Amino acid sequence: MVKPTLLDRPRSASTPHPLDWPSLTAAFEAACLLRCVNAPTTIRHRRGAPVRPPESVEFNREDAAQRMRHLLDRFDVSVSHERAVGGLRRRYELHRLTVSPAQQPGYAAMLYTGWRRGRGELLGGPMPGASGLRRMRRAQLAAAAWRAALLAGGRHIRRHILGVRLTDRELAAVLVRSAALLDVPAILRPGTGCYLVSVAQGPESERIMQATELGAAPPGVIS
Image (tube, rainbow, N blue to C red; front, side):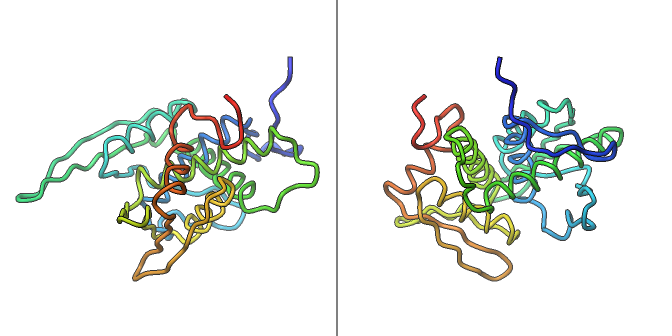
């Protein structure tokens, strides 16, 4: 039996437990979902210290909220889900997920580890002699970042581009790198209070959409 690859070095008792690849991908996607809807200043942390995410997070799409619940369930983090409807001429929904105070420490550590390691894997250069399995795992991380952005970011769809608006500069950089790992060129444009990351409509956008489908094999991998 092959043991799962662990992305960690020998650790002290205070260091979060290492994550295997599937858990890392889930934790990273959850962290990306949170960064899509929370301004960076609300999740900033001291250097070397786990993030302190808000106890509640709000999504304006039910599928984004349900995806977050599913990912947190993998780590036995239970949440309460409240739905609110507002607006007069234009109705809208808000889906609020709340983590209990007792589960906040584990929740924060999971998000911190998932973001730090996932971001490091994506933004780091290719490792000499990297195995095909590691390249596949990096593609899965890239797909997870785009899946989170398409679910929870501000979609910007035009006839010639598929894009998302984000307030988090780090996440925007991760999306550009993730697109490259999926063999798709992406463009980053700063705007007023946000960043627009876009890919061209056509084969490029189709490749992104196919990669973000749950259960899809990463590009270049035969399922």
